[in-house]
Length: 496
Image (tube, rainbow, N blue to C red; front, side):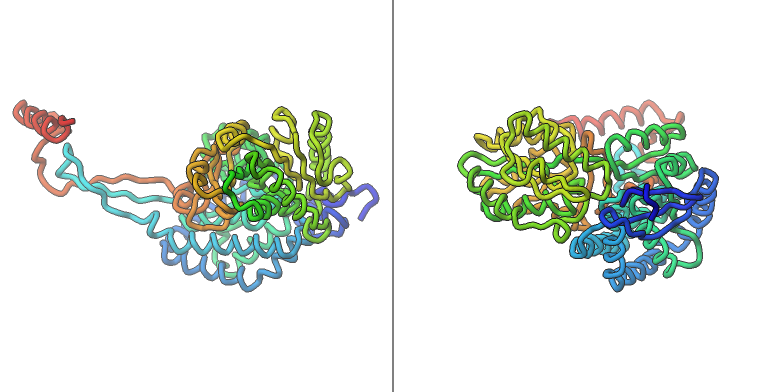
């Protein structure tokens, strides 16, 4: 490694992207960088491959995707080790991430035909002589721009949905985790060698922009809200539809009848797993007054046992360390107190678990995404106040509620795309549930039936089955037939 190279920071030398471990600087691998022409060529190849892939039908695609699923399951230790080498993720966390990816691939492959296959719909009054038919057709080529924090699980949500729906995919992994992205494509090619149905293009942000303009039929993006806006601008040139999963500032609400110990364990997991580098990570906690002190004490006790370098890995993006430090310093300057960690917790490339209390609502650590192993805990009078404060940001991705009597009612009112009741992050591992946010957290969904439909266009077809009894859509209708239509409308729909 050269003297000027920063561990973990992507470097391009002589047209090659070099990936390194964020703590040790050890090289994880090298991949060629694609220019705009190479991205366009990959999209052109994908368009031809998509025609072949679509011709296999749901059953043919399912058979191949299930083989890929089995390969991933057999080699889970391999990809977990690679994720640790490239992103610094603890081995156990990487295994759990890979397991989630296998789950989503399995669900998508199994259910695509049921969700997207042709079906007949009920007829309606004005067109009784016609039957309705609905099917979902693939877009063609889907571009997937993946993140670095969950380089297996997150892109797999989009890749599995797009492939199951019949699309080819051009995947641009994060420049921080290109080797994991390449591994995914290489393993797919082992089970589908006939056509380049899943390709990878590598590089920095300009390669992602080129992918948006390369002629793909849809883009699935996961990343920061700021980058999401750039993706949307690039896609706007050609009216390329998008599904966006952006940042989050998720909250946990702890009601007065919650199991405090379980809530604390879940809050620590939600806030500290993957060193807090989780879009659906818990960054804020709102505990009602009767359980506040006990909750704070339990969180501090549990988080204080975690150790950097083992359970808490390094911060993958070097510049994120500055943001985490600024958020902690801002909270303390505005009257907040560190009951665990604090300003001294930031020891690059690691950040020790940090718990802050008495942090005002206008602090950056309350309003902005921190993306580190930090948690603010705020005392509230009741669940109503907790909801008001939890919903007080522009984000709306996930969240959690702990309680008994009112937990589900509180969860329904939390402004977010997903909520875990008496758990945290659990919705991300269920293949049959949609995943996505509102507001600055994005729009559209991956995972589940909604995720499958994101990657296919609905196609409506009507078929005449006999002569028209009540001709409506013709210039040959008679006044008497129009009068019959009027009478039918009043009889069928005119009653309150």
